[in-house]
Length: 474
Ligand SMILES: C[S@@+](CC[C@H](N)C(=O)[O-])C[C@H]1O[C@@H](n2cnc3c(N)ncnc32)[C@H](O)[C@@H]1O
Image (cartoon, rainbow, N blue to C red; front, side, top):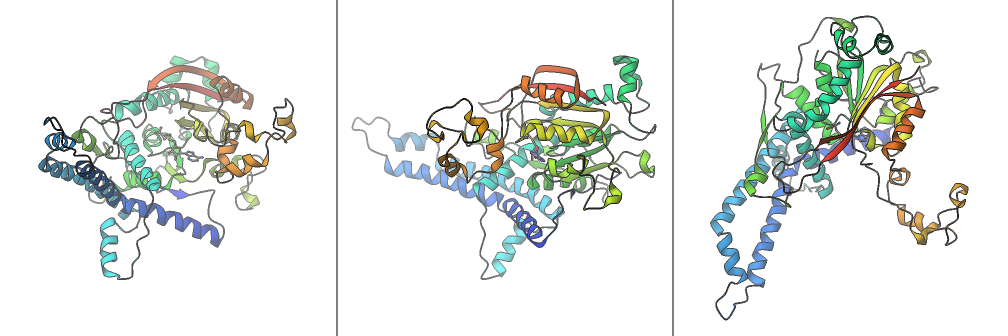
């Protein structure tokens, strides 16, 4: 069965304003895809300009003929070497742009070259430049493509993905593979975990925050019905291209691209060659032959949207889609929710947990691995000057008069999710999971891994992740 193209679900724009907003966002993301190489080339020119300025402004001649800024710079980096370096860098940006252009073509948008031609043809064309912030999102996409879809990324991703796949295999084996759970669990466990509908129908697994989609695809490839989801359009465009545009089912060939995922890194770099080196993506053909087996065949979907909105129809009293009463109770629940580096993206963990709880059938599995990096943390802290009465008061925070207007003014430009965010410890997180209605079956600490890490960098960040398997108690 073909993996589906990402489509919006649960967050369909309902009015013209929302439609316009969605179109504007799509345009903005395509713009940053199209301007990627230009942005990086111009930034690099800016760096070269600084080097030139160093030469001209600080070349004081030292009387005794010792080293000057000019002499050491020129000896270290000749004009010829500079030219070579620029070419190397430029080629890397073009390589990445070629990949991004293919993503653009796949989603029906203009490529960077088409935009350029259009600009040359239309005299009054005014370029709407994207921002550094938007370009950094494209840099992250390329690093995620490396993590999920290159041979080099396997070491990093397999530490976490294999753990999650192993848990599915152990507690929710594909029929025919039931020996696995019998070997690892008691008979009672086996009966509990297998409340999953008629035999031979593939268990349903949700993979929220699926990024570039490799984990969701691996789960599907094992025989589960897999539903990935993500709210980042830059990520979704690239994952859609890899899942649907590289398989070459029409041409019978597997399309591969060489990309340079670290060209934007300027710190802790050992060499320009290292910075511009390539990896080939995707490392596997992601498409699977269509099947005639109907509901017996696993299916694979990728949804675009914010996690809580996408799955809000599972919440009690909220089961009707678009007010359609006939849908009441018809929502098919999942047998497992599998998260990799996802639960700490929650501005409010309890909301995520409650949604996961209601997405699952009784006895369903909640499996997760990752750190607790709390993505919405670190903004809008309350400072001493923000206290309502100028002093701390033990009870004031519960009475709602804890913070004065200054804090509001200082933070009103922030996304409200920053102000909602609480950094829970693992102990607290665990208690929230248990009190939500889960039983923890497995818990393991210090699973060391990296995330989109440049193996040649002088700075590498290790995460000692927590892995757990929890089961929804009926
Ligand atoms: C740290 S990445 C992990 C990606 C992938 N699971 C992996 O292990 O490589 C977190 C992902 O979750 C997505 N994400 C964060 N918050 C989300 C939300 N509220 N709804 C949907 N996706 C979200 C981000 O766009 C990103 O792709």
